[in-house]
Amino acid sequence: MPKFNSQIINGRFLADKIFHEIRQEIVKKKLTPSLAVILVGDSKASKVYVKLKQKACLKCGIEFYLYELPKDALEKQVLECLDFLNQDKEINGIIVQLPLPKHLDEDKIIKALDPRKDADGFHPENIKLLKNGRPYIIPGLCEGIIKLIRATREDISDKNVLIVSNSQIFAEPFNHLFVKGRRVKTCEWVSPQDKNFSEKTKEADVIIIAIGKPKFLKANMIKKEVIIIDVGCNFIKNIGSRLKRAVWGDVDFTSCGKKAKWISPVPGGVGPVTVAMLLANTVKLYKQQHKIISS
Ligand code: GUN
Image 1 (cartoon, rainbow, N blue to C red):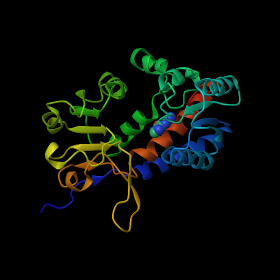
Image 2 (image 1 turned 30 degrees about the horizontal axis):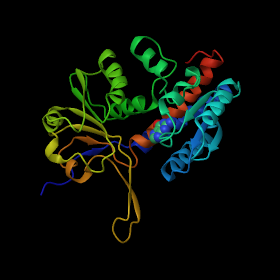
Image 3 (image 1 turned 90 degrees about the horizontal axis):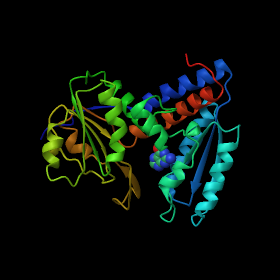
């Protein structure tokens, strides 16, 4: 039986390096950036993510403000909270933790954010500017993934990237950053429902997968020496007698690890780097608002 051959892309190591750089810049330039998080409801997973963001802000010297609303909060209440934060000059970055409870219109709420304070880079104006010009901010998730791929030091300029996701909206910013930025040869999108799914995954040199299905991508769906970035973060309950809860990615790490050249693990891959990029974006927004030129 072949052994685990892949090299692991260490997201925690990379995130720590980014945190260190952020902290140094904040101290050296005496910056006072701040991030506000709106958290609606009591999802355990969302609370864990928000806590990680809070801890990271504390570590780097970014003021952190948490606005918690009940799970039955009205859309009007969320919009009022956003409006208040949009107006507040002391707040540089804002995020609305997703997913929101089902009765709330996520698109409408994200659109109500001031795009100049959009620390996630999810606002449609920033996505539009990413395609056509200079956005205030690039989605931290996309930049984080690009940084993880770069950390492998592999030359991907002649490679074919495949984004595996349920919605094409997720893939759009990558297409711009990768292809228009001339970083790769092609960047395509495939849904897990596509009838030619496995053929497409077998041809890809780089796979970025975000579908929310634990251990979905198996060794028989990939080619040898592929680079895999696992965005999946699935909370699994009641596994085994020892482990009560665990987090699994969308990739079957054990089987793909025998074939892929590089894999980002879950946990410890995309997650920490995305948090680091959120903080980097907050500092970037602060500098834009204070007209400080980036060095
Ligand atoms: N929920 C899971 N990941 C994210 C993220 O990167 N940003 C926000 N706002 N919500 C999330």
